[in-house]
Amino acid sequence: MNRFAILALILAGISWGLGFPLGKLILHETDAAHMVLLRFASAAAVAAPFALMTAEARALFRSPVVLLAGALYGVAFMVQFEGLAHVSVTLAALLVGAMPALIAISARFFGETVSRASWAGVIAATLGAALIAGKPDGAGSPLGVALSLGSLFIFLAWLIVMRRAPKVSAPMAIPAVTVIVAAATILPIALLMHGPPKLDLSPVAWGSIIGQGVVATLLATAAWQYGSARVGAASAGVFINIEPLMGAAIGVMLFGDHLTVALCAGGLLIVAGSFAVVLGERKAEAA
Image (cartoon, helix red, strand yellow):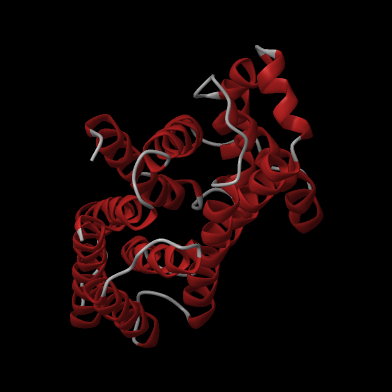
């Protein structure tokens, strides 16, 4: 595998993983929709120079594929963090561990080879997600679990659409335009749901919003876009497991979340299954 692609995917997983604990801090002072709006507004402000600097980048605002990808990205985060408002940091993070299995399944439908070992991993990860969803053990409500899982399918649609994005020379152009389109999509939804956002937030909340926007959104998106374009879909997907591992660890250490038997067993099944997916894919590629 490409070494720089792997490093980029690791960076994306770490950056996305920070989104859950930072989001929980912000949710003490505002609602989920406004939090996501402010997150993407800060990301869009930093992304604007990359999106407007060249004619090639500006042309992406006329690409139906990029516009759809940006809209899906924004909606996925809104659904995910509405779910986070009803579950613990640890539970929300561990549910993301089902994502590599979903990516592997989609890769098979789009012609990539998926071995028996990979399918076994898919089943294990699915069982892990079902175990967590079926028995959250006080870590969240059924609504929160449903929203968290539902957001994964929207993220999967985003990943599929992004694979059809036009090729451009500037590596930051597509991530920057995607983030700006996502912010534009989120704005009317958040205003319809709750009206104008509350801006008199504490320094901790604003610091968390900026961290979410710059690191957990723009940097993570750019790193993922670079890395996933250079490795197979299932191999890229396994690095998403860095996100739930980080989120779960921070949730337990800093937010006092309880790592129950169901959460622990489900999380282990998800992580082990996802690694089986990648190992199976590599064997299939070698064959």
